[in-house]
Amino acid sequence: MKNNCLVILGPTASGKTKLACQLAYHLNGEIISADSRQVYKHLNIGTGKDLEEYEVKGKKINYHLIDIVEPSEQFYLHDFVRELKFAFDKIISKNKLPIICGGTGLYLDTIRKDFSFTQIKENEILRKELDTLSKEELQNKLKAFKNKKLDNVDLDSKKRLIRAIEIAEHLKNNKTELIKTELPYKPYYIGIKISVEERKESIYKRLILRLNNGLIEEVEDLLKKGITHERLQFLGLEYKFVSNFLQEKISKNELILQVSTSINQFSKRQMTWFRKMEKEGVEINWVDKDVDIKNLLEELDQKFDH
Image (tube, one colour):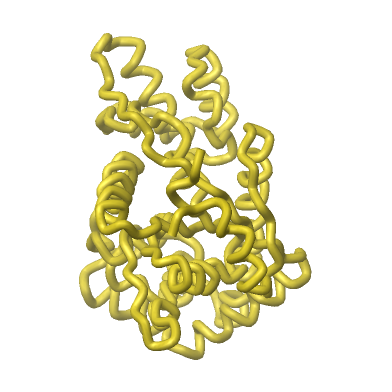
């Protein structure tokens, strides 16, 4: 069975966008971003959109799911499921190759798992109640439901635990039939390999570059546009710590240290997620950061009709 899409994954700062754009150039492809923060407009430097990379040898590479919602709005998993399918169908209809590129584990999981329960609406009253509980209490509460569909929840994330309990509670009290969609994706996975030392160095260099290229000013602009500090905290990583810096809660040196530490922890969690995918039977073809494109194209030649 031939594959009908390519997935480029890897930890943050491993060069996914660059590789995806080069492959799109050679394989007549278009890129679908699987990054939970690049969907937001005006979040350019902190999310590393690197839009200049979407031009290879003078040819513009089309991209999807970047800059599609305002930063004040919330983009949910069910929104991603819908938009991914729409972009995928659109690219296929043009006889082009969809290249899904990103490091958001949950988004990557929607390519191969049924997430029909994401249609369940939020329960604000329940959320407020659950928010007062500790992570351990939430974990125990979720276990008590004994719902196998929620076995893959990230137990380290309070936000994900609350959402899972919300879903479990709804399914317990409602017999409503969720709309299941046939997954049309037959992906071939490429993962970018990068050593821990190289990753740390890459993260640090990229952060300094972003700070020198207007990251703080980008956050100031967001505040001028009416984005609150509370929302910046929710958007996480760079936005969270620059928000703290602008509120004079931390110094510039602390900002650099805290963002670096936080991004390194995030990249470790990404690698854990990718290993979990492999344990679940996903075959990820790992390549070096500076892979020879020619050799890679020869391998891919057998996988796709193009």
